[in-house]
Length: 304
Image (cartoon, rainbow, N blue to C red; front, side, top):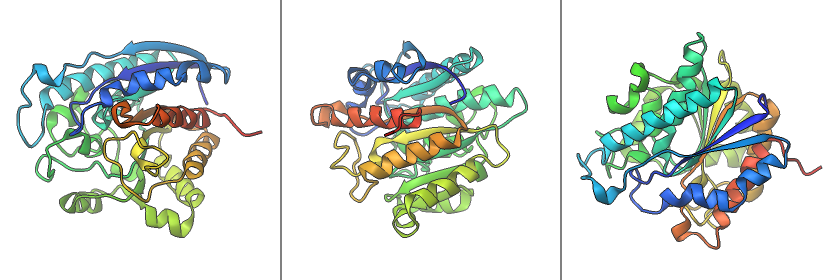
């Protein structure tokens, strides 16, 4: 890793999800000893706490095509400012979700920091879902199905134009790994946008290492480095049961670790987030424990 100081930021948001409970994800990861384990690798760890998120019960959900959009945009803007501030202070941000809509804030903060220096970032998005719906294509109106679209400039302006510019990442520098559940209209968004999408079939046929290596080349082509966004539903559900939208046929335990180890070897990660850990439906915090293990692999833990 480039930095010895790590800033932990909690984003306890479940406004973007259809199933409640992911707002407890940051606590679950901390209970699984994330801070202590990262520190054991030799990093200086500073926990900046959680950003404020309103409770869903306290506000109206607004438009049915992008539920809680106003509140999610406010949260993502606050998160973007916190992430940018951490990077300005020379710290490596690790964001703990919450639902995946928080990624708009994380990516915006990183992107704006490097944009002001005349540089751009790439994005590696590991997820069972493409997260490239827009309000016009979403079958549910849940914003956690839209964050990647927003990061590349597609979607509601409240999210695409945090810091008053879009896109935050050029589509050609985006690699999505682990796809196996894509909505019908969303499929067209993926195909037209210009992102590099790698499905579970690609992993089955080519092997995970080859897919990850190609994805890293995509994310690092002409960029300062890349942000890593890891949705725990990318992993096979029997290994990660505590997620809101599980899909059979995901990455195995070892494939998940191999992806993190390969990413660490590349040594170009600018920020990291782990999202969609839902303790309400987990089994003895297993999913959070696995998430911490994967963060450790991404930060340099090795078998020998």
